[in-house]
Amino acid sequence: SDVCSSDLMGHSQTSDLRAGTTSVPFWKSFSRSQLASVAATVVDFGCLVLLVEYGGVWYVGATAMGAVLGALTNFTLNRNWSFGATSARIEGQAFRYALVSAGSLALNSAGVWAITEGVRSSYVISKIVTALLVGVFYNFPLHRYFVFRVSPPAGL
Image (cartoon, rainbow, N blue to C red):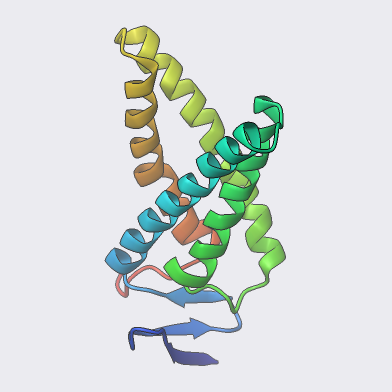
């Protein structure tokens, strides 16, 4: 039950409706997922600033709301655009995404602490380094192969 479809740019991808998997080229999904992360970060920080500065919301509550909206943005863009994984059930994807996000939170928190304390770096530099490492080596592979179940290239 393979289905071949095209995206807006005319690129094809295949879906196996039984397994709920897709096959999107690695570099295409990698670059798109990085752009989705940037968009999610803009939504997260934008929501924080707007809620605090113009909505009078307490910064801690606004931080949580921004994080939730950023996560929803990232999930939606990744599902629909980065990985083209719309044939699978959203409930399972959302559950797996939440698990990966919890791990990401733990890795980011530990990484910022370890770099800041261990190397005596600025927490801002620690955050940037940690976010890049976790994003590329943890979030992307788990989103691609676990959350959205993109098939590995033939022969792997």
